[in-house]
Image (cartoon, rainbow, N blue to C red; front, side, top):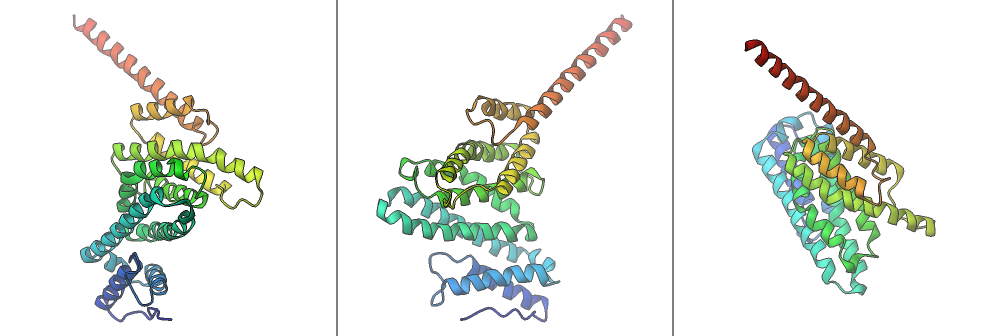
Length: 288
């Protein structure tokens, strides 16, 4: 089986060349690296992880504009392939859905892999921006009637990917404009809120049902969502919290902490405004 050797290159140029070649193989899609296909792709992904974790020259390599460009192009290929495969699901026959799910899960695996390496290259912002941009379409396809009662594994995996995007934004690792953060939240918060009780119900009905949101995943997503909400402008917070309170599924994610903080901040802001107005009035009176 062909593999990319893990011998450390002797100079920076060699390191860069090996890394760039590995990225191109690792982000190849649709069997574009014959004759070894997935074997070479997996080896390339492992090589990249090894280099990012062990090679002391990598900070200089990943700072190179050409390297960043190659990584961004690879990310774009993976996103493009994912969107095409996801959109095609609603056109597949019921018999073909199982094999189609296996193919798209491989693409999702590539997205998860990107989530792991991009923070080490300070490029996670590119991932989150792309993910936020397509999230509305992704959720719309997942909610299609044809997929309503199938592909539970895919649905959970995409929730996991969204959780990583929310964590990156919520904990300040990725800084994005408020409208993009709102878009990300408004796409996934209702979907996660809807899916959690459905998955729980399926697990209760069938103990062997393998697709669920475990406790760690639920806690990490809930914490990330609260952090994202609290960092939004007050009006956006109010919209999201109002929608949450009007929902039938208020238990998860539980945004009561965010609501309490919003109430406190709003009262404090109003109090400061009243106090400020009072000082202005008193100054006016004294001047007269």
